[in-house]
Length: 292
Image (tube, rainbow, N blue to C red; front, side, top):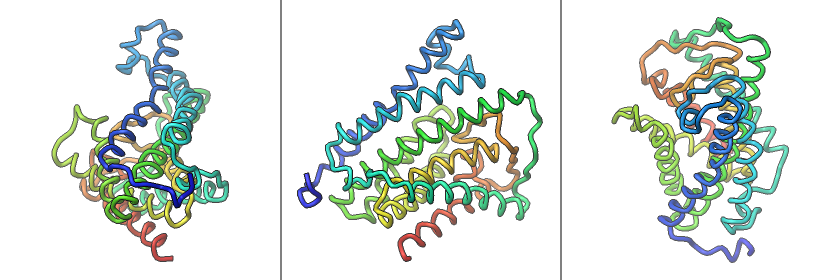
């Protein structure tokens, strides 16, 4: 199938099918839970409820994400989705991948530095409760999960959803719809602690960051730029800066960052990725890719 032969798919079916494929990619969670349960002598339910969390179990989860989740994401994109790799921007490009990693490391550091200058954040060396081996294990686990998340989410929300919706409704509307969809999926994971203000914040941040990711994707013609950025951004926030991700803090970061300002400035309970500084960064980077 060539790009000229691409036919429009029903937008609602696109969202439903990509959500199903997103769940398919995350089957690795059940594999890792069985792995941990066998190792720790616990029940599957206990592991799924987080009762066996440790650096070792985190690494098992990260390893399962790479060993099983990444191949499942690749099968979903190249076999089940039935679109040309080149049209989706999935042809490997190491240059764009490295560029995304570099930008994904630099931007969160800049965001937190601005918050620190404005008195909204403090950065220190964390009080070590883990030994060197446990810290290294935790960092490896964080890196594995960041790689999987960047790869899987960019495939689903950009190469599948946004790319497909752009055929039916054009890129501007596709950014809004796929961004809201991106946010909706993230709301599901926090349903137990969700409030109206938190939901609104997540949706706004999701649309803003989706604009940046789509701008990178369209301008470069390669999904590997946003994949690299997404993975590096996640690792920088959790593994380097020691910030919570999706409301959950993982001990073992190289630094410890504490946000102590107004929620709209710091992102509040959602996290620094929803702060007004981060939103401005998404908009600026996205506009640079659109205009340059």
